[in-house]
Length: 61
Image (cartoon, rainbow, N blue to C red; front, side):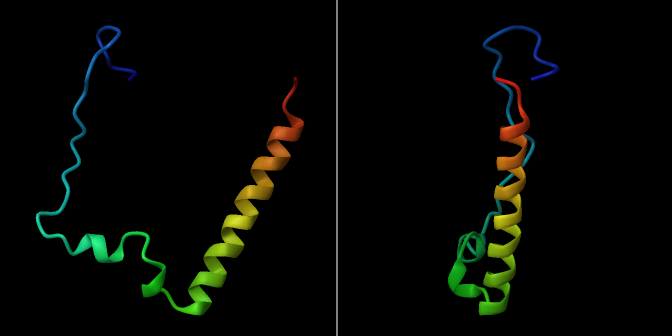
């Protein structure tokens, strides 16, 4: 967006999806995580939510 020459500019991402569909088995698949890893990720997410809440409460208006 910073390099867009004008409004309504369309830019194509340089990222390319894998040619094999194997990534779909791993992406956001909770069944492939251990119970311990699920607990760790939930704890990290809870910290992120608390941080976001604190920032929102400090924001003026």
